[in-house]
Amino acid sequence: MRKIISTPDAPEAIGPYSQAIQANGFVFISGQIPVNPKTKQIVEGGVAEQAEQVIKNLDAVLKAAGSGLDQVVRTTVYLKDMAEFAVMNAVYERFFPQNAPARSTFEVVRLPKDVRIEIDAIAVAG
Image 1: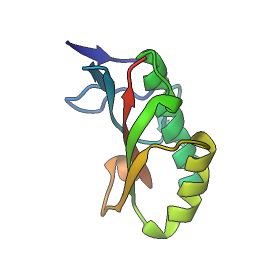
Image 2: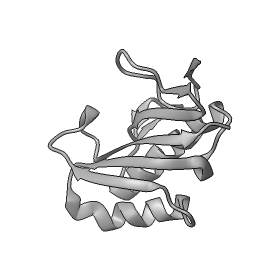
Image 3: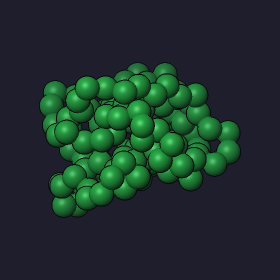
């Protein structure tokens, strides 16, 4: 069974994809960027502020699926500049203080809307 997950509490998809898909006991969340879902604008500031908004967006999608950050088993972090890894990691650790999910982090040339960070995730469905 495959279920589309959508919530107004996270940015709308900006292309032909879903915010998330729930299937076979997991939630597969599309990459989230630091767009405030209320203002539809990229959050001001550097990678710390952007990382915080991205994780809040992930959390909103997870909640819509009946799950939560504590159920995340895997993330992929895409950074515009790997020199910002430590700053991103400090924010990330606040949201995943114990039993952190498996993770890969990559530096990429460019991200949608020229943001500094994007994160996708896989979680256990609620």
